[in-house]
Length: 538
Image 1 (cartoon, rainbow, N blue to C red):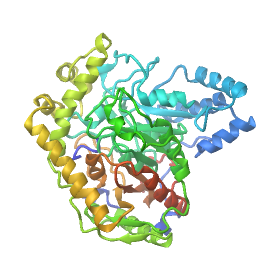
Image 2: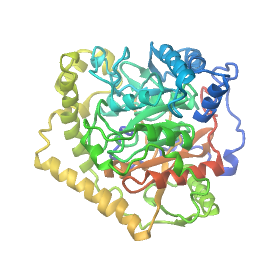
Image 3: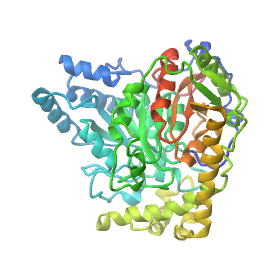
Image 4: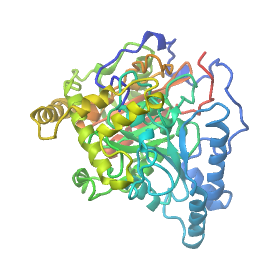
């Protein structure tokens, strides 16, 4: 989920609004406080998949040497030094897997662009290995998945090395009020690598922080509403929230099947396109993937076009603007898109992009109880807790560890819900689909003949606050999340050293078209820059 108030459209808190800067100013070096820890220059800093493949092809590096370099960096900076706390668990078999992939490369050649590439995945994605899958909860410490998730299976087939798992907002931020994104009972608090006292956003917090800080080549996150695009925006990354059904959710601890999906979080659009292609495909374990037949690609790099904005029509969703410095960056991004050949329709008559209102919450409460109980049942006797009710009881018994900062009000409300045949649920699902699709995104795109809709993705990051919980950062994830449509965010600049992102979203299965647009914007602006692991923002 996105932040605690995922169903409310929040104004940027005045405490987090700092002096804005334009696109040109964002490129300048800013006066910032001391770096928390200055290690020696990292050899793989900002390395792309292509860079790593070239290094392995030339013999300069191997899958083993690359993995060791990332593991050394994690050791220096994650739990020690600046203590980013992005990694919840390392894969004890990572180097053995890397050695096997190096032998395979020598004997048969690489499988593809992910061969030997170390990535990390969120700790709600099943792996049948020596790592755990807990969703950050102590209740699942002894759970053992019966098989790999579809996502893990596809990554292994592509030759990627799952280097470890990342911390997250516990239960994907669907537990209680006043939550702090990036905190879990098992993993503690993940910090934003651009300023360690700032929040990385949730719930794919660890995935975002790890990829941004160059702990890995890329990461996988999951989203129900905002949990890929928001942490990507606040950590200076590219994030792709795919159409629901493009990537199987089998083996992912759920919130709600109407909106859940997994997707890539990377430092470039090209790497995100490569990862997305590796994750697609029909899966008998997830009925939603049947709708992707004939609509998915195994190679999305064919849609990378530096001239991809030329001749396009881009609609501006003013509903999601907040009259602050973040908006100033988006305004200048729009001017850059015009320069690159896009026609900007501003505004798009403020369509019913959030008219679903409380219906989203109703849907997710029902689905969380039913989908989570089904997931736990699938583990059989390999799960220490079997139902949502048992998780609630576990938390109460262990409240000194689990409920130390905030409660489990959301879980309690979900437990009160009945089956998915109840009228309240069916009516809410119908309302969400009608308002977000027919009367929302599809209506706006049809009326204005749009290729995509743009809006602020959120930011800048607020300070982490364990007393009051998350504070509003704006954002525009809900429309595409409720519709189950794709959403891609890319860096759009900085405010006092903190990243801000811009989102491109559109119709179902429009990933090929959407990838062209942020790629062209990225190639023209090159806003991404690595974090300096500052203690705070000046």
